[in-house]
Image (tube, rainbow, N blue to C red; front, side, top):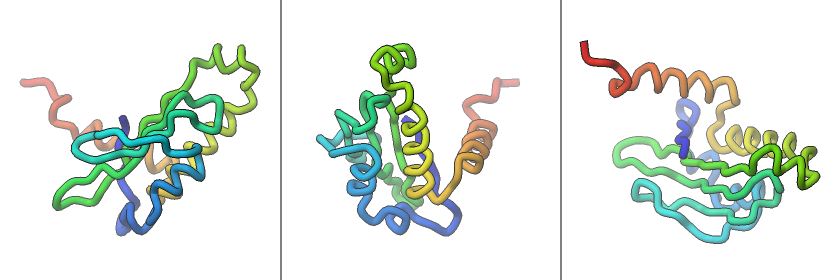
Length: 130
């Protein structure tokens, strides 16, 4: 599960007031919920795009902090996608992921990557004891 911050000055509620509807618009009908760190996330068991096996997405709420978007895109192996004749759907899957994340977080792929790099660099658990 990955968590994404919103762009500075923006909130998840502002960017996606109907997060369930946004998830359904990009990936297909929500079939249930799943608990993650005390928050209920939306589950799409049979996504519209055949590249995806399952998608879990929703607000990861933190007291005193801005909510983050928690997402897990479970994808089929590339060989299986090709074997099923759905290789052309892979490009659409990448676009759907990027467009969804841009709409909800307000951040493009480059700024999301940079943010992930900074969070890893700042993680004190990754620093060996001297």
